[in-house]
Amino acid sequence: MNSADVGARRRLIVMQRLRERRRRLGLTQKQVVSRLGRLGVLTTNKALSSLEHGAGLDVAKLPELAHALECTVTYLLGMTSDPRSWAPDSPASAQQQAARDPAAATRPRVAVGSREGWARRPDLAHRPANTPAGLVNSLPPTRNQPPHA
Image (tube, rainbow, N blue to C red; front, side, top):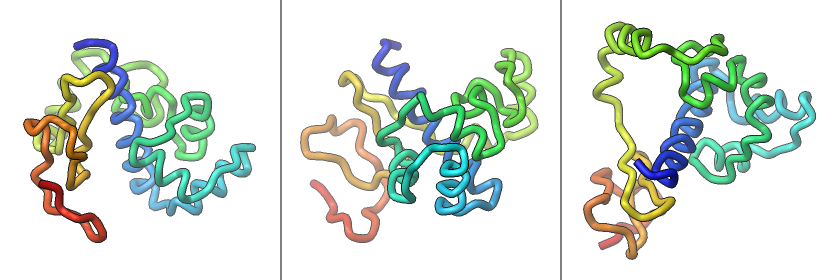
């Protein structure tokens, strides 16, 4: 896997972890924005939504995001399955986690393309015309998005 693929994969992991953690805590985006504001990070609901959808990720804000979401940076980076753990999971503990959560194997995965820096997220319903046909998402178009041929 080349460095562009690794970078794309890490961004997608952070994006998923941000959204999943906020939802697991039962927080709205507005509540997370308020928590970030108390930590000195001024942002908006729209900006947080963009982060949760993979746009505009600033690694300098990861510590504040982790604090607001009551987890560690290690968790946001996908290096541990425990939101409270700073230590990365060992390969053995990752296997134990898979045994405890068999549904994890069936969750949507991200397809990383051969084009440098290009990746498809499983929740995007359409693709730009210049993307490789082999990486098309099979989900139906979402509201306000015309289908692309």
